[in-house]
Image (cartoon, rainbow, N blue to C red; front, side, top):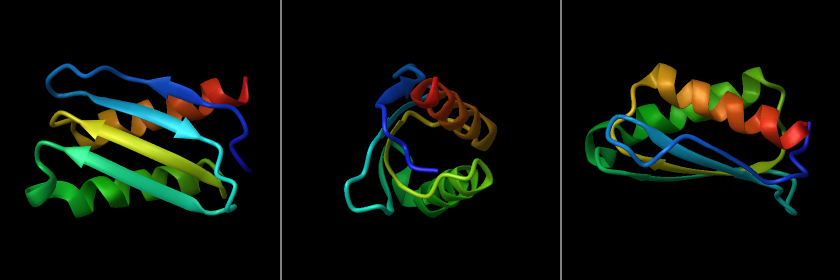
Length: 88
């Protein structure tokens, strides 16, 4: 499924992540991460984001993550919320 509508979820509070999902004209998944813990957990954040999109059947989007130290389940929940908002 391609994302066609823009949507956001989350906050910029500590231990949360602000997720923005956008349509991608290149028909690929593009994940961009800004995180206060990128050096330590950047690869894990990327993997959680990618796995979540694949689990939801997303084949094309731009996913922007502004992480403030969120745990994996929070990242997953925020991505799921943004996807649901974009398709409603």
